[in-house]
Length: 339
Image (cartoon, rainbow, N blue to C red):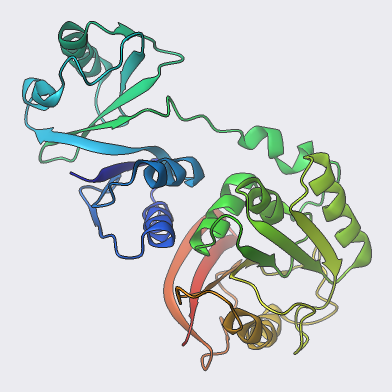
């Protein structure tokens, strides 16, 4: 029946967009549909790819196979038999949208059918029970409960810190929206302290960061070393130059510099975006990728700043907004390279 992904509860458009981007990254022909605001169904059936998407999704709480749909837990549990859970394995029933007693009732049915033991903290198998508003759906994952390690990589936990640094969850989102895969080449042209670089490298992506200011570039490199990262590097470079110091990349994502805390050398953010997208067009077009996948450039900026990009090279395919505080809402623009 394909797969389901359960989103975190933030009331924004980008959690859904992130899952759709990751499905497109690993299986371009797969189709996604929203069963509700928090539940996405895909026809993707590959277990390994479902697991990768689940692990990478910053705003994804669960990813696994879709086992069944129904109006009652008895109906949902009909597909579960003694062969569903291997001997000696433990399980748990979890939910983001339903009360615990309902999960406990389904858990009792599964235990009676499989004779498996329940483990609330470290289960081998997770059954995810959710409501779409019209019916209930049941998913299954053999990855155990998903855990997040954002706090370990928060800006102030790094060796080099600047107030403009973004948090790892948001950095992970930007990388995922760029549709980059493991062993491909990713660029953050305005890397600052290296928030996106760290997340990209930990995904197994070959990563390069540019920064205009030498001491900031050195600080970003220090942060990479602080996490024992070896598949990333930082170069002091001006990303608004017409010829960037590399031949090609597979994806780009960045938080465009703005404000007094950033290194803009007097340039307006609008000008930086225009000049950079013109330079980026060249390195995103020269690729050895025989699959001819679309290439993306993800730019985040304050929403009040005019988005003036090179429309001859890129098309704006989606845009999302993140409220930060009364004077700042961030706009996340996803550009697709024109063929």
